[in-house]
Image (cartoon, rainbow, N blue to C red; front, side, top):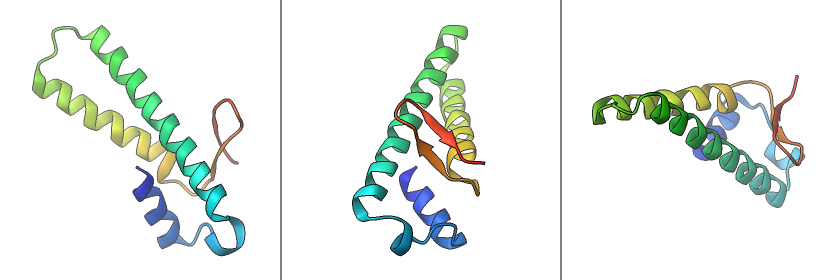
Length: 93
C-alpha cells in the first residue's frame, strides 16, 4: 500500500517531497499509515469471518481483495492528506 501512495502522490504532484517532508517525517507518516491500514484490514477481515463462518476459500479470497481495495480507495487514492494525530488517522479537509 505504501508504494501505491508514493506513486499516486508523485504522479499527481500533490506533495512536494523536497519542500514539505524530511526523509524521517515521510517514513514516519508512511509507517503510521501502513500500520493503520493493516489493523483496519485485520479488523474488517475478522468481522467478516465471524459473520460468515461457513465461507469457502474462494469467498474469503474475494473478500480480502474487496477489503484491500476499499482501504486503498479511502486512504491512499485521494487528494487529501492522511495524517496521524497520535491516536488515529485523519483525512485533511
